[in-house]
Amino acid sequence: MKIFCIGMNYAQHNNALHGTLLKTEEPVIFIKPDSAILKDHKPFFIPDDMGRIEYETELVVRICRLGKTIPERFAHRYYDAVTVGIDFTARELQKKLKENGRPWELAKGFDGSAALGDWIDKEKFLDIQRLHFHLDINGKTIQEGCTSDMLYKVDEIISYISRYFTLKTGDILYTGCPTGCGPVHIDDHLEGYIEDRKVLDFNCK
Image 1 (cartoon, rainbow, N blue to C red):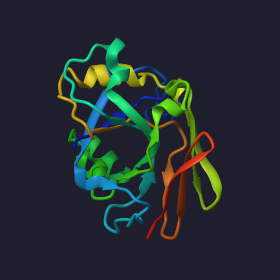
Image 2: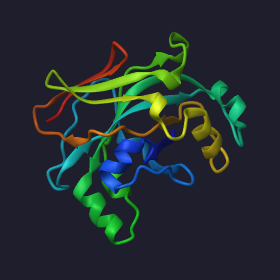
Image 3: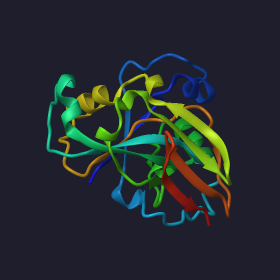
Image 4: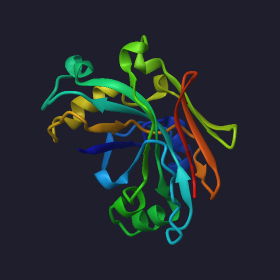
């Protein structure tokens, strides 16, 4: 299983972190190992040696068939379900790695860094590019987004990735996060929603 992640896919998030509202020339792609997956409502154990750990709430898409060099107009055939996920990021470590011109996998791909909610069949929604999603921490909404604000839409991303990687059944795609990232702490309770459906629910320890 491959875990594809998209960076800088919401303008306001880009502005908050990078000081720009501009769309990147191409999608920003990075990959997490399968050991990063955190599912089934299991707790997230905050690393005690990686500095500040931040949540990034994202819509996640599940690939349902084998595909390579997929035309954008056919990309919708290659995913069957969506959920909410958290791309946990060791923010201080990421900053240090970027400043030194190094890859950010250590800050993005550590164990448990890809929290994953329960899947919902995409056919339950009229248009996955018009979905609202949000994250609550300790009962308070702290991050909200809408897939209509994506700079690169899901079908565009799938077509782009498939030029370089063969997509396989069970691969997943984190589609980028809106503005509003922040730190998590021990005993935080995280709940993620697509529209009014709670799909993500776990604690930090």
